[in-house]
Length: 238
Image (cartoon, rainbow, N blue to C red; front, side):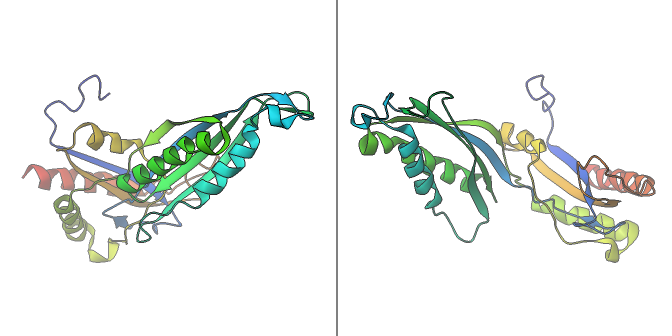
């Protein structure tokens, strides 16, 4: 959509999403859904194959991978931000167990409170990969295979939203900000940094959780949420 010019002439983007009961009670709204910046990183470590009886003739990528995993586990960034980095898959050659394999692949899942924290983690992971050649003689690559930016919301639009909710349904329907997970909506801001962005949450009684195969929500929220969107857009255009 972005490549097709959907943002041409656009100054403000408004998004919303129903929230599960764990985030918002039915009939309440939050002005900010605080998604995280997230990425999948694939690390490939190439060693040198050899017979296990002569390990000195090879370069063991599994040993290098164990060192790499330990190094990534020691990464430190701003403790005032929430973030996580963890290996989720590790693969090597399928074959004889009495030989040193030629490569190892490790997949990592990264989550961070904002884009700057995510980039800091990725940068340190690349440094750790580069250091394996000096330590083991193994060559390593570190590639981001999937990526979703975090939110960068417009504060003034957030305040306008709160005023609109209070004026439409009463202050008691304003909930606290919620969030979690990634959201590709935020590629709009990434593609066009000057955009003003609002993305709010709707308490719809969704249970047992978002994207659960048995998820359901209270459809009584639909006319109420539709009216709120009309009023929010009306205030923005005014």
